[in-house]
Every structure is written in structure tokens, then in C-alpha cells.
Length: 473
Image 1 (cartoon, rainbow, N blue to C red):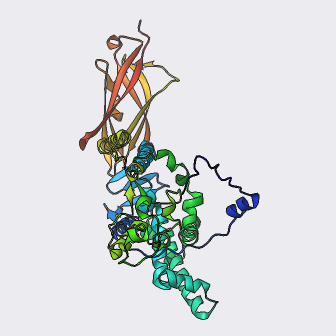
Image 2 (image 1 turned 30 degrees about the vertical axis):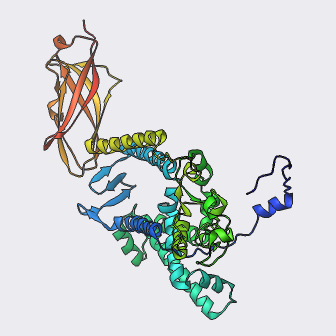
Image 3 (image 1 turned 135 degrees about the vertical axis):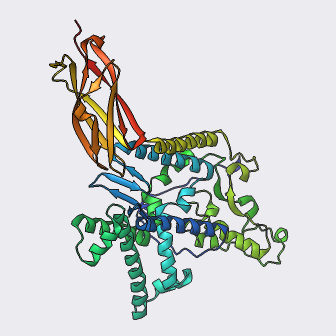
């Protein structure tokens, strides 16, 4: 874009209210992305296949005679392969969300909207729907021709086939989603028997409809208008962030030519103005206009431009992953302090999460003093303090737990409460009493420790602190 000279005042740009309204309320122009092949297309397809495989297959895996991944809300048990989580473990979910947010900052600072182009569910499912659309309707020119054609039996058949595939795929997606919260094998049998519960039916159709609408109809509008990430991504960008950019210095002036033409003689840049970079873009932008918030960094324009450069016998990289500094020959500083700070914090949080999960005990203990009765004197001359023991067995196996107490010389538990049997997943509230001789009690309030250990696994042991009260003479 040319800039005004020092002796020429800048041209005044007048924008009318009608122009603004026309832009805001313009009817959506359907986008027909052309299929593209290349390194980034392969990586994108591979990423999508892996993510879809994880989503659709994990509920069908079994682990210890149960569904491998199951979030059993009624039972308040969340199974992830060999791990069992409980509502008391929500701290791990909070930590996981923090890691996800920080990972977004890290990868955006490093490589722009990498998440949007290769891993976002909207992108992955939209690509799946486009794949089905290409199978039924053909590539870009055929789809455009079909939509412009008058209504006919053939057009109805093709469109009906496409939407039938979309609907079946969407309902299977809804079934899989519900299958993470209700055992998917039982769910499938209930569908065949027409005996689904009301909430299961609701969420199956709700998630199926959301998939059908978002990936089949809305597509790029989700990314452009509804996704907040597109709006605040620029706050995480700097001139050393890897972005997809068109090399204007090398590409301009653009224009058509023959392969044998001399570029210097015709005063042309490397861009042949084929517009293929626009045709493959899933959001319909022209990357040659510069970085835009609609760009989701899918890299389709890089692949197709490299293919054109190969055919023209030009060097690749007219459109490429680069930084603003590198584009203007100011050096590249991809690995800079903020990247190392984000990466270091992210790595520390990930290692901390894995360590805490690996080191966690499948038992939860809480000791609550009886505040209505500070202490009592027994017939045997002991001082007795009463507590409420809340014990939860978070393991998948039943356990017998041995109770011991320490902190005062001769401190003992009532004999009938020394061993407690707790089934897998059971929470037990049990009153217990500690006994001590008055001569051994030194203060009005004494710190005592109550240890709960599994009799069949000494590694499952936890100690809680409480107080033992007595009014010493």
C-alpha cells in the first residue's frame, strides 16, 4: 500500500452509516474450501485423526472389568484408566485448567494460533464434515456448481445423502459424549431397546445437534464471531511470534505470467495471482492482505502456494511460517525470555500434577472433635475425648483400616474401634474415643495424632492431627 508523500496531504476516507450497516448485516457468503495436499495438510489430518480416535474410542476401552474412561456423576466417581477420582480431588481439575490456560499462552506466544488450526474441536469436526461433503458432492468447483444448479431430483438426492451422513455422524458423536457419563455399552443396548432415560435422550440430541449445526452450517462463523480467542489473541502476539505471512517484498507486484517469462523484464514478483491461497482458506480471507484475526493458522495457504512455486520453478516460502521481525530482515528471536518463562512454569505445573497424582493416597480422613462435651472421666480413671472420624476409601478395593493414636504417653483408642472395614468407594462416619491417664496429660490442650493404615497395604497410611482436652488440677 502506497503512503502519501510529504508534500501531499493524506486522502480523507469517508465511511457512511450505510456502509457500516452493510458490512455488519451483510448476508453470509458461503465458503467452499478447496482440498489441499502437503506437509501441513498431512500434519493437520494426522492431528485430527488422533484426536477423533481418542474421543470416539476411549469410552469403548475396558480397564479392570469397567469402562476405562467414565465420569459417573450419580456415584461421584471419575474413572480414567487405572485412576479413580472423587469430588474431593477437584483440585486436580483446577490445576488441569490452569495448565490448559498457560499452555494456550505458551503456544500462542511461540507459534500463533496453532491450537485453532490443528487441534480445536471446531476445526477437527468441521474438517470431518468437509471430508464427507467432498465425498458426496465433489471438490470446490463441483460443490459451487451444484449449489447454483436449479432444484432437481439429482440435487435433492445428493444433498439428502450428505445431510444423512452428517446427521448419523452427529448422533454418533452425541452418543459418544453421553457415553463418557453413562456406560456406553449399556447406553447402546438401551438405544436398541428404546429404553433410554430422559436426560440421556436430551444430551444425546443436544450434543448431536450442536455438532451438526457448528460443523455443518456455522463453520467459520464460530471462529470469526463466536470464539473469544480470536479477539484477545493479539495481546499474546509480538513481533517474534511465529505467524503465517505473505512475503510482500518478494511477491509484489503480482500478476499472471508464463513459466518461461523473465520476472525482472516484466517487473513482476513471485506471486502469480492465482488466488489458490484464498480458495483453500477455511475462513475465506486473503493472506496477502496481511495478518488478520480471522486466520486460524491452518497452513493450507502455505501448502498450496508451495505447490504453485514448485510448478513455476520458483523457490518455496512465498507464504510461510515466519515472524514479523524476520519478514522485515530484522532477525529472528523465536526462543525469547517470555517463551522460556511460560515454558518453565508450564513444565513445572505438569510435573507437579503428575507427581501429586502418582503420590496421592486412596484414602481421605477427617477428624472432628465433639464440641458439646470437652471430656469425661471414666470409671477406670481415664480421661476420654470423643471425636467423629470421617473415613473415605477412594480405592477400587475393600480395605480394613487399623487406627492408632499418639501424642500422649499411654494414649489408647477404645478397643472396639481399633479396626474399621470400609468398602471400595464407601464413606464412613464413625465416633471414636481416645483414653489417657490424668497423670500423663500435661496441658489443657494437647496435640494428638491419629493414624489410619490399611492392614493389607502399609503404604496406604495417613495421619491427622487433633487436640485432646483436659482441665489439669
